[in-house]
Structures are given as structure tokens and as C-alpha cells.
Image (cartoon, rainbow, N blue to C red; front, side, top):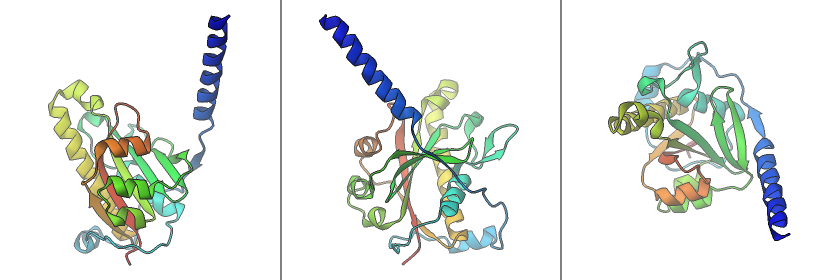
Length: 217
């Protein structure tokens, strides 16, 4: 009897868990722009680290543009993305933290899926050694990596390739922010395990980079 009850309980937990995964809200992002009146040279010249932000929220279009610049699909036939990746293996996963919750970017469909409804910026700020810009920015983008996607082909050298790729992605975000009239700041000082716990990352995903984005104060 006890064994039967245990099986029933496990089955219920499985159904609830599977249901929660299936019920994740997916939000389609506006089609990204591929042209503007602002030159690349201008964004390079004007890019600076911004650590003080206004409270104004970013629009869904702005968020979508930043994520597209980071990992958006730029060649639908071959699946190539906005940032170069060793062997086109794409080990990165992007997360967005803002006041209405935690989101995960889905490059193939240009959508974000809501993972949590809670504002995690305060917790993320504490994990980033108390850096206030992480709390004040309306959006924090976290770049995470699954190293095995690259090391399975390139061995230990794949670790270096993955770190290089994180830099490519981050630069795209910083320059795109300037073109949108926004400011950003790169953050590498944080406690990895705390960020993993805050975002509830899958076992193989490791946080590499936090970028706070918003309107400069």
C-alpha cells in the first residue's frame, strides 16, 4: 500500500512539474531593426560604462533589440547568430531580470519566456557584491554558458572560445544600447554560486557576465 501511495505521489509531482514547464508564458518580441540613422563609429565613440540609471522602464522593443544584437538569428537558413561562435555551436543562454520577473531568451523564435514573476534585482545586486547599478537598472542581462557544447568538440580550448564569445556578445549589447539612447555597464564581479541559485540555472549553465542597461541618469 505504501509503495502504491508513493507511486501516486511521484506521479502527481511529475504532472505538476511538467505542467509548470508547459505553462511558461512565451512573449513574442517585436521584429528587430536592421537599420538606423546612428553609425557604428558613433556608438564606438560614445560607449562608456554607465552606473547611474533613471527609473524609466525599457520597452519590449528595446529589450528585444538588445537581445537580438546579442544572440538573434541573422541567417535563418543556416541558423547563424549576431555574435560569432566557435564551430557555430552557440553555448550561450541569455537571461533578463527586470521588475516584473525573470526571463529567458529564445533566439530561434525571438521570444522571451517568463520563468519567475519576482523582481530579483535586489538579490542579484547583493550577489554582485552590492553594486547598486544592478539594482537601479531597469534591465539586467545575464550571459550564461554551457561549456560542454564547445568542449565536446574542441576540448579544453573550448573554454577559451566560450569566454571569447561572451566578449563578442557583450560588446554587441553595449553598442546596441548606445544606438538606442541607453547606457550600460559590464559587470564581472559577482558570486557565481549565488547567481546560479537566484536564477535557478540548470546544472551545466554557468554565469559569465552581467550587463546592467537603462537610461543614463
